[in-house]
Picture 1: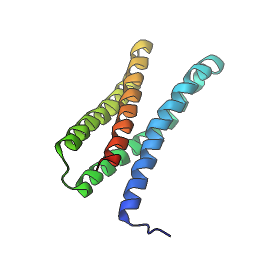
Picture 2: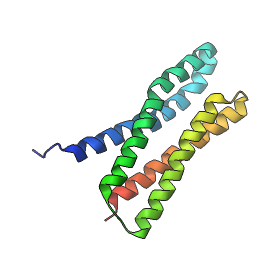
Picture 3: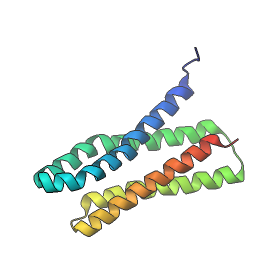
Length: 134
């Protein structure tokens, strides 16, 4: 059996937090339309329920991301550039989600939700690329 060390725990926490943050946005986005049609009053409580787990997951994601950077040591220029773009996408995802939360206009709410999700999906893509980098 392979050993479970601190690196495995760090990466597991990072992936679990990403799963909650990104997967939760996808699931909530998929449920928004049906909830709005079947029980419009249930949409806000569902979003608040997600926020109670989503925002702590985002915090864990950022903390373990910083931990990953510190543990990874120095890498080449292409790695560093990719990492910088990923960090911008993570920031964009969090900012988009926060603005989505506070937006009152449905169009703005949807737009900021899309920004949050697209930023998160881009960060996942670049995260995989970074993990595969030599």
